[in-house]
Image 1 (cartoon, helix red, strand yellow):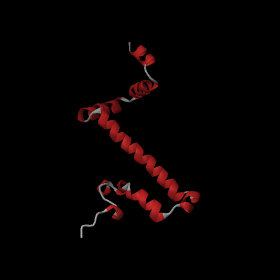
Image 2: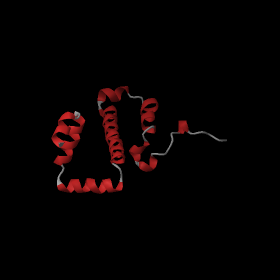
Image 3: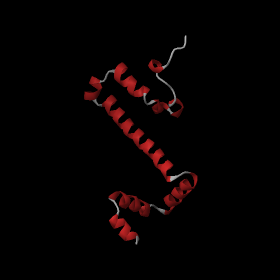
Image 4: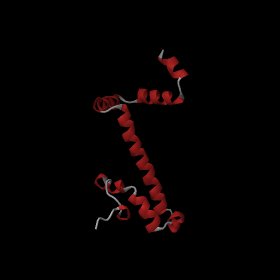
Length: 107
């Protein structure tokens, strides 16, 4: 029954099931513990944030360190904006901070 479900389902389901089957016992236990504490949807959301941040850091590294890209980068108008929108790179405590240009002045 499981085999026919896998064969009829999408490639995505096959990938998911293959990964689950290939998990070592210890990782299966870790996943079970996580699922007791949070929904699979919440775990996926957290993993997506991590994956997106890793992609961002890789792109930022390219922008800053590849000579051709670095030569055209404008620090104040481009790099500052990129960093201001992603303050988490300095730590989660900075994630709620706001750029000076976005702050409202009340005086």
